[in-house]
Amino acid sequence: MVVNLLLAQGMVKHYHQQHLSSCCALKIDLMKAFDSVHWDIVFQILDALGFHPLFINWPVACITT
Figure: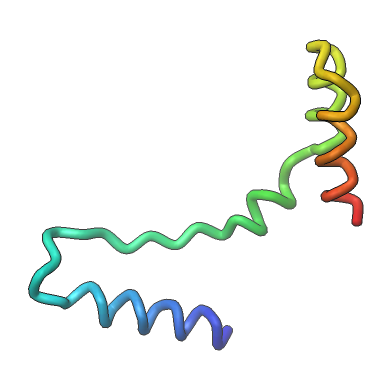
């Protein structure tokens, strides 16, 4: 919660600077998007498309640890 407040404060502070042109504030929850992916299906598709096992196993190691 504190991180979100600090992020919002920083965005508002920089949004009102005179030397900036029109801008937009956008916050994306990448963790939520990342967690909603069915990784087992993604890896099965990569395997079916003929990707090298090293290319598939590297992200598997990152996700499962």
